[in-house]
Amino acid sequence: MRAILAIAHNTFREAIRDRILYLLLVFALVMIACSRVVSVLTVGDEDKIIKDLGLATIGLFGVLTAIFVGVGLVFKEIERRTIYTIVTKPIHRHQFIVGKYLGLVLTLAVNTAVMTGGYYALLFLRGTATPRLLLAIGMSFVEFLVVTAIAVFFSSFSTPILSGIFTLSAYVLGHLSWSLLLLRDRIGEGFGASLCVWLYRILPNLERFNVKAEVVHGLALPASQLGWSTVYGLAWTSLILVAAALAFTRRDFQ
Amino acid sequence: MKTLWAVLLLAACGLAVAGSDGKLRVLEQSRPVAHHLLYLPNGKYLKLATLGNAPLAADLIYLWSIQFYGDYQAEDRYKYVEHIYGNVVTELDPHYFDPYWIGALILSVETHDLEKALALLDKGFANNPDRWIYPYLAGWECSYAKQYDRAVSYFRQAAAVPGAPPDVARLVAGMYQKQGASQMALQEWARLARETKDANVRRIAENRSRAIKTDIDVATLRAAVERYRAARGIRPRGLAQLVAEGFLASIPTTPDGEEYHYDPATGEVSAGPARVITN
Image (cartoon, rainbow over all chains, first blue to last red):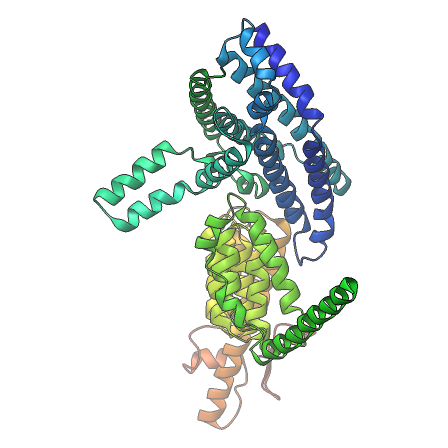
């Protein structure tokens, strides 16, 4: 456990020195601030636009951070040849992967907290801040956990560019996987329908973590839905991390 | 020499850009302003491309639509209003109130298409059955169009939604009154006076009930007096004569239980000496 925490700590320190992280963070805060300007253009409910834009910005920039920082995690160690030093230490490879993952999750937690702070500062100024919005941000964070795991998985055996493309594709597919069930309903029984169902099962459904509309419109949001969505996210994260650890264990660094 | 060629090449490219841009602008102006709206896909499909940010996409298209419809220079800008609000924005975010409201307003006021305005508000209510505001707005649209039957139906729907303000129920009786259906209005006001828990609404309903009952009674009495005069050639000496000679089943009393005043000289019927009520 100490080894994992040491790697996580180092990964965090390394990530917060990364310029891309600051670039994304500043851009996200600017976007959140701009939502006030955009909302002026509407006729009707300005607060709804500010809330939507803020939540979407936090979600989008969290995912971009997970992808851009995550895909280079393992590759950088190989490129700098520090991996050769690490593999000679009494550290298991799965510990290395989990440590890297936790370091990035910590970075994302700090990142999300800063974005949430900026978002709430704007909402407080307008007098429309409500703790319920934290539910949507919390579920977005569960989504970050899954996307980060996917980025680490691809990073464990591929180059940053390919890992980035694969992770981004997985993110897009994860948000579209629900449409496979719609497609199944359209094409009826048969091989195609079965294929849709199987594809749906093997892809994480990232829409399960999307409760932004429910939160903004004040719709019913059962605790069981939030609880099971979190369990679903953690289960996928664990599954992907195990696969990443397996892929990384099989790599030959000789 | 190379620099000169580079500058000349840059100038030529700049001219080509400016020239082609000018030509394209002329071509674009010859097209109907709203033609590109046709290519905005249905929100059901657009939702797929938003990757979980459908409400934000709805906000952005709604914002764009506000700027677009606010441009009074474009003559044909109101084409496809129902597509933008009904098929795109409200499909992306079915709980977003503003597109239903503004869309219905544009459809009824600018394009004078009441049916499409009502269809949009009906969709809003179907997607948000806990919001009384949709049938309430639809009721007013029907009222402006003098379609009071439909207005009554919408206001009834609005009043039946839990949490609707008690004043909404008054509009049902109000529409019957506008329609000239006094008996229906009286029944509605009386029912409201019995059932409402709001003291202000009860006071208004009781006052309205009394006023309408008085109007109905006076009209009935005046009609009987007229029938009598037509049959006998003279006005009756008193209201009792109308009953005695079979022109009226019984003489009604005012809501306070008093008799109506009748002036045999002029044939006027009133609820009291100070107030001559006519239809």
